[in-house]
Length: 147
Image (cartoon, rainbow, N blue to C red; front, side, top):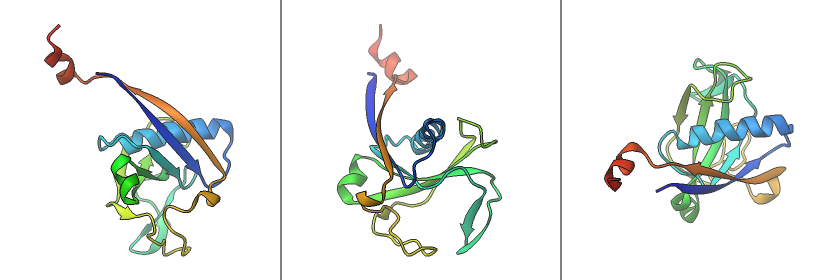
């Protein structure tokens, strides 16, 4: 059966309209990479080339990426989130080439670089929007219907 997934996207700054559309596309692909269907996505940055490795900021060996945190329904109820990177070949890309995901953590987890919680309070968001995504059935689901 096809479904619609409503997702609230949060931004810590106000990107341009073009970047908002691009970041939403990249963020949703990244969050659904592990077959999660997010209900909330926090876009933590624009596309950039650095990351923290063993607590030290440096050039990310995997390349340019969008950093985000996402929550599915279960995580929203528990107050947890997953931090992810959606890697792109070029800053102008709208499709990911790879996604990486950290382990699930409480929203209150504090980032060592700035002392702020990973998922901040509503007041920290500069822009938010709800977007609907449609999902079509996969091959196994279609075949099980036997038409």
